[in-house]
Image (cartoon, rainbow, N blue to C red):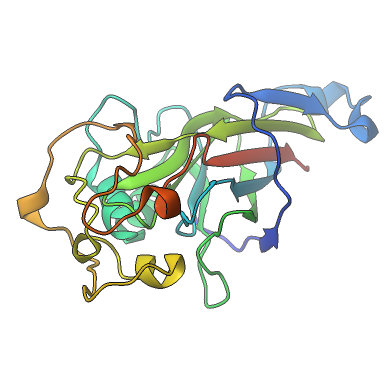
Length: 253
């Protein structure tokens, strides 16, 4: 179910990315929280979730779609074919199909699309923060966000375990994925229009927000090979080094 949430966009001084392991820590002010707070999620719990773009180049993220859910819900799985909903995010930045799927799912407690007239694409060095509530049995968080200057690139996490104690945080570094749904032409004509204006590399192509059946790849989700320097994209401008993003989840109530 979708409900009002707190949304914030903030510039961040992001330094250091040693690995892609999950890091768990307990804030000092809540270190003594025990009893019911230390138990399982048998009652609603609130979380503050921050997603940061730590790309090394001019690679922008579409505003992410974030969900709290039970383990039975899958947003994406590496090594398997992308769903239509994920394909639309990765190729076209179209969140509507995923919104409809999450809204209809019995496994999802709450979800939100971080969009609005004042919410721009997430630039390198910036982050977005949302507050969501998990109902009993919802122990996981997932999100997906398109890499704007790619054919079908995205980043995200599927099924990150939520922290149990109030004040506890879980942070994870995230790589870039290729949805395996569209050939990586690296041609502006085959990518969403915002790429040119955001990166400052221009051409006569208008771009597109629709999939081209002639470019269908029929592959599986895998780690993105990066920008190789095709028709229009430039590795030194549009490329990146993994990890490309982080997610930080803090239990607040």
